[in-house]
Picture 1: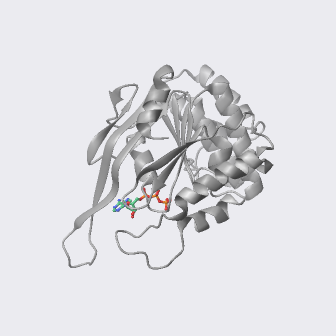
Picture 2: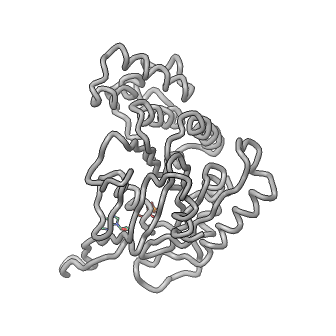
Length: 293
Ligand SMILES: Nc1ncnc2c1ncn2[C@@H]1O[C@H](COP(=O)(O)OP(=O)(O)OP(=O)(O)O)[C@@H](O)[C@H]1O
């Protein structure tokens, strides 16, 4: 489905985030004594994310997934083009967008509760309400009785749950997730995926979820945006018309079919950094090894 089709398709559903003709360049030196030259990381990227949608982005390493997410977060800016949220240009980070990254990024000196309350403090929510709200999200991610622990006393999966609770607690409309489950083991990842879906169904947030896992993308998303390699752009958007809830869906024929379709789309994508591919290994091969988990 092309983006214009999506725009038409979304006639009845409000568009939440619209990226128009995004280009992003970095200035890089190829040799220490050379002048910096332009490196085009993203080109002609158009994408519409609908209100309440779960959109996953997959693509070869280095195609610009994190760069794009950073721009939606307002932590980086397009070299040209524009990204709007609710029709307003994104000019910086704001509390309408929560971010969950790989590697948790928790404050090590704060307990679980204090980490979860961080955004509420920024929002100047009164102390009594902060406690009530943080407790609700701590329970939602299954961390009751761990409120007073510090991050170094938690497992990887537990830290990731804290990061999710922290992002949800201040009630952002949009959740931006950059490979949030990459650092946890396969079993914990599946548990976290199921919990994330449960929370999403309850809270109706708009989610953009970057992943290397085709299975993960298909399991979670309403649509999967497949990016092409350098310079990164949206190659195709695949609608995931699988029923919800999706417990047990991984073994179904329909799941296998859509997974294969995305795998094929990625088959010819190589990250070359602008040069000719050195080896004949497609990104689909490297992605599918993690997706097989
Ligand atoms: N600060 C920077 N300076 C120069 N080049 C950068 C910078 N940040 C990213 N890039 C380049 O931009 C391209 C896109 O990077 P990005 O991290 O967005 O890719 P990605 O798709 O998220 O990769 P991965 O899947 O490996 O995390 C890469 O070629 C990267 O080397």
